Amino acid sequence: MKRILVVDDHGLIRKGLRQLLEDQPDFQVSGEAENGLQAINKLREQHYDLVLLDIALPDKHGIDVLKQIRVEHPDTKVIVLSMYPEDQYGVRALKSGAMGYINKQSAPDNLLEAVRQVLSGKKYITEVVAEQLLNNLIGESQDLMHQSLSNREYQTLCLMASGKSLTEIAEIMLLSPKTVSVYRARMLEKMGFKNNAEAVHYAISHHLVEADNK
Image: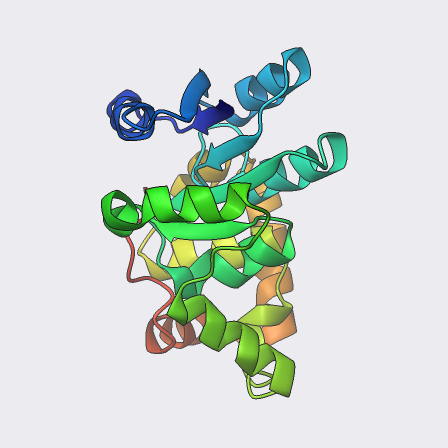
């Protein structure tokens, strides 16, 4: 019986994932967490074979939680499950140590296949993510400036492009407006933009704001 931890801040989503997984005779949802700190604590309390991890958690960004899991529990496999489309965070999640990345909209159709594949020791990669990885490998994506951004800088860019104010971004990221301003300034400098409008135009033209930024 494979032990699974479900990490999502929405109770209904956790309930739906639990029902879907426990319909299978070899899966057991042994724990749930609604934020990153709870997830880390539960992993310290007992062993899990797999973590289903949302990106948009209320206390820590999911990529940061993923990195901590990989350091503290390198044998525990992680699948990132998010509302963000694959071309926003798929490659970033894999590079940070995830074994798979699934858009929540496609989860009912693909989740069980992904879980079985990852538990067998293989990565679960969609066609979109595979194409991005290939582009990275052969150097075709070198002109995509957002790939040079840190996760926080990238999150700031996406939230700006989705119409969020500086104060709203600070609340979502659980940071001070001053800290968000620093990330924004670094992002603009790295990408060579003079102002927010240029950054927003870039994000929209590269389809970085298609998902519901919850």
